[in-house]
Image 1 (tube, rainbow, N blue to C red):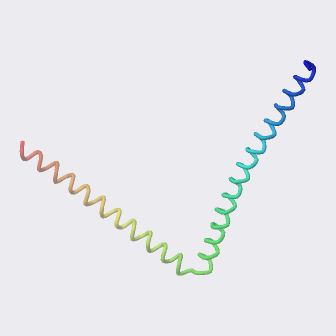
Image 2 (cartoon, helix red, strand yellow):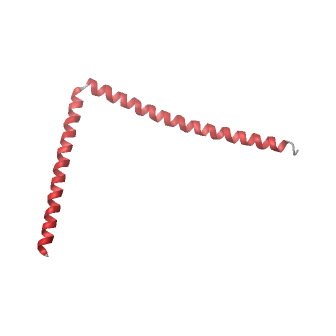
Image 3 (tube, one colour):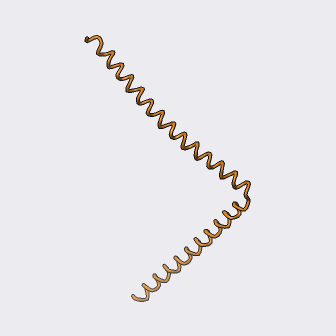
Length: 92
């Protein structure tokens, strides 16, 4: 019986190694599926934008409006900080 123990351990190690390999392959397959879905959506978005120029123009206008709003908010924030700083110095 002692002769068979190393073979059993070797077999157990092989089974565990194959199970680990299978689990790793499943994880890789899931990641590839996710990447495939992302690539498909990117391709779809590109087709939509190329076939509908109004969408691209709308996106540009939206981005411009966002940047203008952001700039205005930063100006207001700086003015508010300056007023707060000036008000604090006058009290002293």
